[in-house]
Amino acid sequence: MNGERHVLVLPERDAAEEVAEALPERFGVPEEPQLVRDALAGEDDAEDAQWLVVVEDPAARLDPAALHAFAEEYEGWLETD
Image 1 (spheres, rainbow, N blue to C red):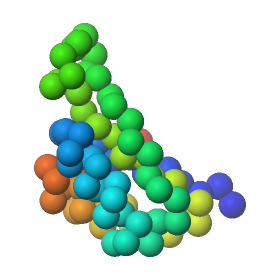
Image 2 (image 1 turned 90 degrees about the vertical axis):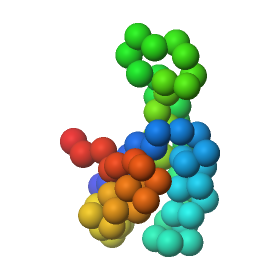
Image 3 (image 1 turned 180 degrees about the horizontal axis):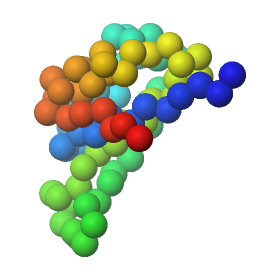
Image 4 (image 1 turned 90 degrees about the horizontal axis):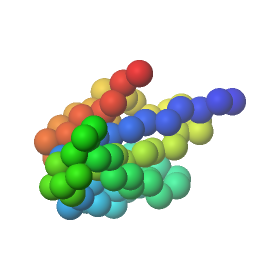
């Protein structure tokens, strides 16, 4: 079983932290999501960074559409391959 990894992109750290805290309760995510700062290419200013919330989904049971809608509540989106 390969599972999946979902990456939610958020515009700021506060939003990313809120999403990471809410994911386990809202979606039953077993592991705490990982927060990653993603500086935009060529930008040194922390204000121009996006934040990624990485969600491991070993059973591939999370609905990408639901995750995308959830991220949109925080002005973010679900990254797709």
